[in-house]
Image (tube, rainbow, N blue to C red; front, side, top):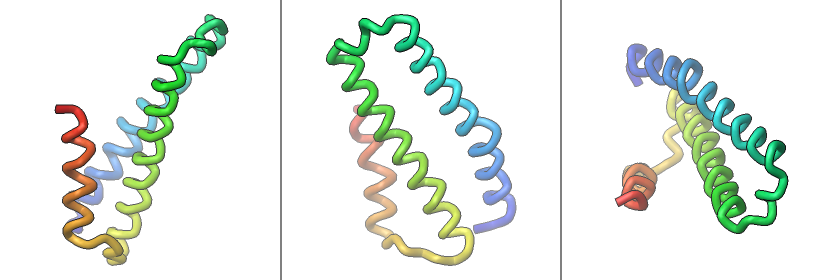
Length: 92
C-alpha cells in the first residue's frame, strides 16, 4: 500500500467515518430516550440490527486495513471481491 493511500485512508477513517458513526449512534440513542415507546416498535429493532451489522463491518474494515498495511494479506483475491461487491449489491 502506498504512503499516499495509507494517509488518505487514515484521514477518511479518523476525520469522517468515526465521528459520523458516533454522531449517528448518539442521535439514535437520544431518539430512543426521548420517545421510549419506540422500543416496542418492530422497525426499530430491525434498524438496530442493521446498525449493529454496519458497526461490525466497520470494525472488520479497520482490522483488515491494519493487517494489510503490515503485509499480512490474510484474504484471498476472491474473498476481497466478494466483500466489496456483495454489500453494494444489497442496495440495488
